Length: 97
Image (cartoon, rainbow, N blue to C red; front, side, top):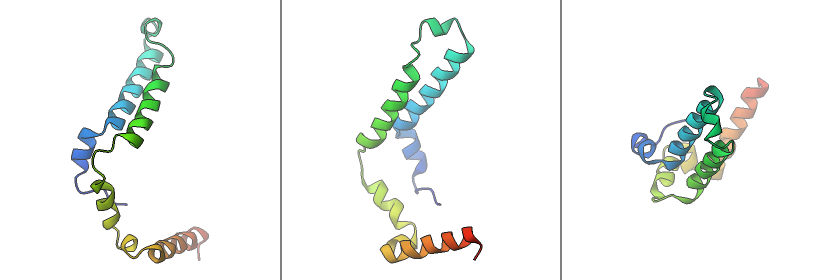
């Protein structure tokens, strides 16, 4: 597995990651500080995680990043044949063949 070349830019602009981090922080606050649990609704974490999922699916300003990620692996450039070879190698390694 390789990271995309501009992973820092994607991480800085990814709303899905920001929302997941907010969900993490809100969940910690709700569980650790009982007095704040009265002010924050219990479903806030679920709402933030659902928003992160939606943000990952919908807000894709540039689709070139996905194309660049596919170009990194030479087997992906080979098409389905490369994919089948990789899958067969993985299965053989799992089975110890």
